[in-house]
Length: 161
Image (cartoon, rainbow, N blue to C red; front, side, top):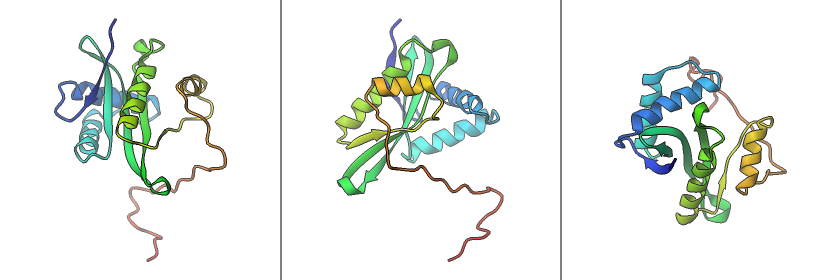
């Protein structure tokens, strides 16, 4: 079966299928299903060009998607792409779709002049780590990933100016 990787914009005929699959992805990672809010959020991210997206399509079925953001790479005076999300519907896994989505994004980033493509995943996600190594990603040593989370109900408490 032929898989086609296509860029997804808000007006693309497959956008609603991608948004529905994005909601499934969120549920997979423990978030509550919220199809309309997810669709609206994804629409805003794409419309504002904060994310780019591509989908894997077989016949008329969206099988998976990938999102990436383009960031300044200030030390290299260029750009870097960060893959933010990669998801393949369970019934389509182990069929090369994730690899095709990754290769598409890597090729698109390289063609756009990016200096690197990066991503992150959980340390215990062995299948993903194997796939990422197969397409050339390497662990980054000497860096720590740090976050500071915010309570969405607490607008600015504790901030100092």
